[in-house]
Length: 301
Ligand SMILES: *Cc1c(COP(=O)(O)O)cnc(C)c1O
Image 1 (cartoon, rainbow, N blue to C red):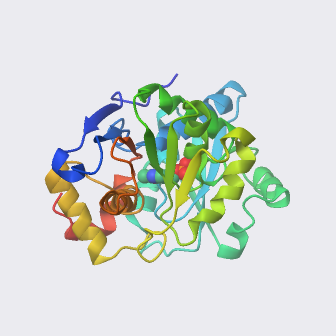
Image 2: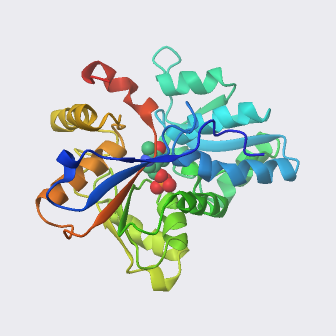
């Protein structure tokens, strides 16, 4: 299996003018280029889920997401490639006329969209609601929101095969924390992992992350939640300017929801001397560029 990636991930060095004289190097692991739709970390979180569903003869997949969800569209495209029916439980009821580009694309890939109230959506992890969905949709294989399950963590841990041991710090944007858990568990313990959350007060995720990784790893990663620009999915003029400048310097497009906020945080930390001079930093580009649709008129790329 594993037919989805069309391209191997690769490491791209950022321009020295972006990080000098603060650290030795800042490189980026480009997961965003592996596939036009199933980009970034989403493929790694999905690959074992889809394989499990196939091996166990499920006829369909069901998962959850908001109207801009990268996970939802990645699941829709993956399911189509594997010829499996798929159902998306969408947070909030959106009129078919004002539906987002993300949901339109999901529909295009054949995903059956089921819009539910925010109250119902909030039940997404309760056994009763799962049971109810399971019987309503003819026993699909259910993947939690964001691919946040054990199979998602196992797939994420495979990302570290692309990370040489020479890096002192590995930086990643954090939504559910699933990808961070996977890479933290399989990187050398001496490599520091820094997670950047794009939502306000995102450090609450530490409790959840700690529950899924060994105790000896609890102090080996740090979460930063200062760079949310108003909250999840929100942006400021400063963020857009940062994205355009970053692209001009490095020729790498960042996504507005996750990776741009992480890189903005790293830039600030570099300038304030947070990273030691001998740091060799690898930032993971987790993809999500479809999320720029709503601001594409503001971007130079
Ligand atoms: C989903 C996503 C993340 C967050 O991944 P988690 O495993 O949920 O923490 C980070 N970056 C991008 C671009 C994403 O689409």
